[in-house]
Amino acid sequence: MHRIPASQSRRHTSSIRRWIRGGVVGLLGWGLGMGAAGCGVELEPVGEELGQLRVHALSVNGLSTNGLSTNGLSTNGLSTNGLSTNGLSTNGFRDWFNQDPSTADAVMSYVVTCAVAAGQTRTFTNPVTGVQYTWLGSLGLATNWANGAGATEAEQQVVSACLAAHANKYGLHVPISVLGRVAATSDSTPPAIPYTQAELDLYSEKEACYFGNLFDGTGVFAANDQPYLSAERSTPRTCGLASGTTQQCPPITHLGMCASLCTVARDAGNVAQPYYASCSHNGKDYQPITARIRPAEIYRCGDGVCQFTERCGTGTTAASCKADCGACP
Image (spheres, rainbow, N blue to C red):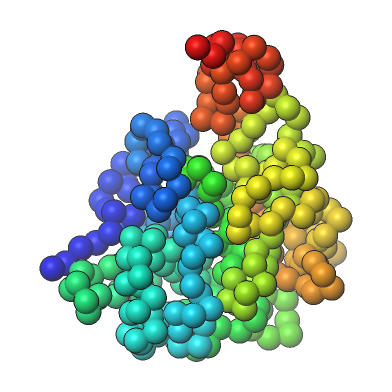
């Protein structure tokens, strides 16, 4: 039996073209226990198509936070065996994958997207079911790990940050700009994820910084890269761009503001870059990923559209938005 997971299906091309032309955002229920319901076009670009989008500054979040919290990166053997044929063929990886194949498939699609370079694939044939899964690379953040070596601490951190940036509390797929540096392989400054001014202009809203380590049990953290959202505003990217200090998005822990936790990256000429070089928490430095979003991904009560994050009521806040969602029955 051969199966290319839904996340790799041929509907990517038309979906991506729709995004580029009109910025359509679809809803997807991963089936990972999130309970997010909705209707719309399923937009799931990863791999080769996501690599093409990277040229145009797009990435896509949609990894369930449930999948993020149960990814098992510390126990599935990949941290020491790498993302190679040998790493995917170990008993540890097989046993982890078969605990919950649908969740593992979703997690691995994002792991490979983050760690492996565009144009490369990783394939796993489940010896229990005979189903073959193919995951495609895009961002290339962890070169050594992708080639089969044990993941360095820098690779563990940047891949963890990348996974957190791609997580979505509601299971929605929203286009984002992913900025930062690949994992350091020497004492020199690692190269940055390519970006253009057009990307920064299109994704003009600073969203959040993400950092941590899912491999060693540290966990992952996020902080706002702009002020907390006011009561009438909301976003499906709530794991990163929070509306207050009590934001709940486990296993991502919200820590406040990037500006107070992170150091802005600078180029060789000491010019500030649109991402952070490092973030600190509890006395430890981490290599982060910085995300930006389009203005359209920040909703406002009163704009005439009842958004996924808004509710009926009598007020003017996202939690009680009469103008958009009407009075509650």
